[in-house]
Length: 318
Image (cartoon, rainbow, N blue to C red; front, side):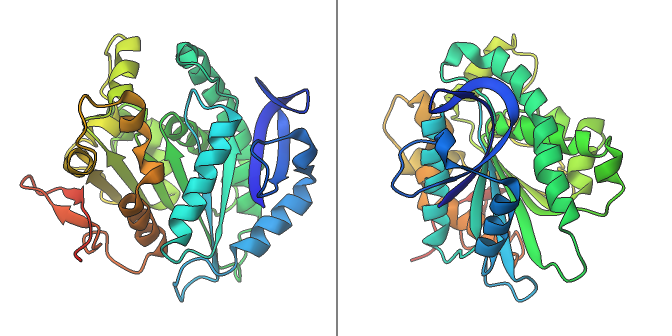
């Protein structure tokens, strides 16, 4: 089963592109799309996720792991499900035995919907708080050793940042001691400045995670286009990385040289330059090391050091 938390309206046998009450679905492995008939109760979904989380990564400090995927803009539900399954397969190939779940917010499936999607993303952050973060916060018990991690792509990073900021404004969540382990941003469609240590927008994000990892690629053509649509007012963290020096608990992983060597075909395909993460075994191995927590961020075999002293994705020796 594939466990998806859907924040879209019902449309025919499936879901549309308008915001709506949350639906919790368990999609059979032989299904090619997310359908309304896959819906189960919230309690059934929560129990199934927690049961499947057991095992996780080979970390003696935890009994299981949940990786929560938050997709970006211009994603149809079919694309969301395909990428959800690629993450599952990619992590399992390196030994992950936990569960991957996805938050499916109502983004469109055409590029011209970019600005509309951004408005919907901000609204969706509220549901990620009330039905996702708050749900996890309530499960935090002294004997609960299941780690939760967030893997966000593109505008999904904006949804996550807004959700953490919103969570601290909600008494029902803020009054509880809660945190996630690893937050990983791929091709983050948020401004570099918004992830600075002194920016109030991300203070909650840093406060409630163990580490934030930002994977960035200067050859990401989609983020270049998105900057133009905003009249170029802000550089994107997924294209140029974090400001230096980054926050102490942040890992800034440069992927430009690796992408150039691994995918040398020119001209750079815009969509591939933005979404190659889902199909890349080395990137998924790096994500696995990140959520495992067994190695220091500077000791991953999937990382090297550039001549500028920052971390860079690389194929492991051998």
